[in-house]
Image 1 (cartoon, rainbow, N blue to C red):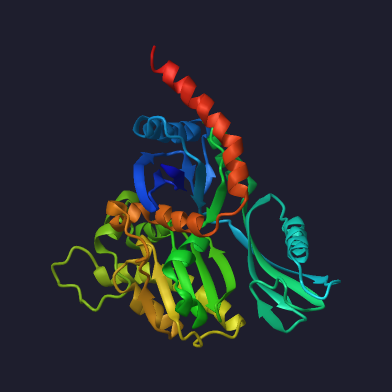
Image 2 (tube, helix red, strand yellow):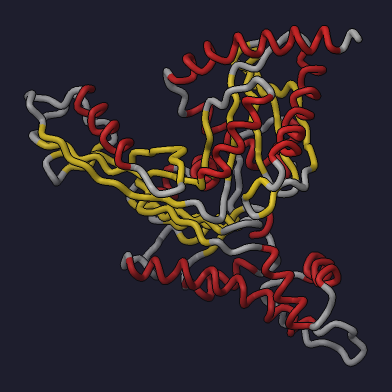
Length: 393
């Protein structure tokens, strides 16, 4: 087996993980596991020791299935309601007749050095485009002629508390993380093809902790953003609006959720479905209005031929596409990821984030993976030897 990767989706309710391998140039799944956890709450680790134990339970499950194969790389998918995306632009004067790799690397280092926010950790810096002499946009400017090069990049940041907590947990189980992938990046990679990115499209990723969205134009990311709006807030709205217990509100939300309802309640109905729909739709409408306000600020409202694409389970609510269409005045679709076919997990929504992250890891590997492999390979060998002797007694 070659290129064995473990992909982890760190969620509030559970941690999902899958081990992928490359067998004769074909991707295959070696192991998968879902570990329930109560030690995460709105992106915060409440109990570090218990969180580490959850990670360790997954690793022990994998070791039993992998035998003597060891994991080459670990990738972690992460979302957070307080995530920040900071757009940075820096310029450099070109001294040679042509732009060299050193010029590009220098600009990248400068951007990385200034991608700093208090109490935040930068987990990913993604080049949007490079501009030559203030006019020509290029993704790869090396060996092109120019006197000045500008790098425009997006720095994705999460609170240091969650970043340090995740790194510490994996370090305690003798695994080093190769890369941490923000949710909206991996989603964009699998859901949007070149036409979507070129035609001006907004991708909306609706999550339990937050709603993230990305706006694409002419093949480039025009903007990424995160709104801390929780699916749990809908439950609270129902509880308050209908004056019922919070647990009953959660059950009603799951069984009667819809964004638009034309059905008039009958006289013998025990539940006012129209009022319930108004409560649910008002929360989603608030999220859509915030995104639309951003589009207006960018002068892109009503001007996105690619339309609006809604993704993830909380976006699958009946008639949510109709509500979005009414707010944005744009064509609206539910996103489909059809690029992968990996047995049962391709159709299992619980592993959607794992698949997105796997696609990202396959497409954007660089020299850092080999350095990470060298550093953690020794750790994993010792860990497996220790685990082998521990199980003998």
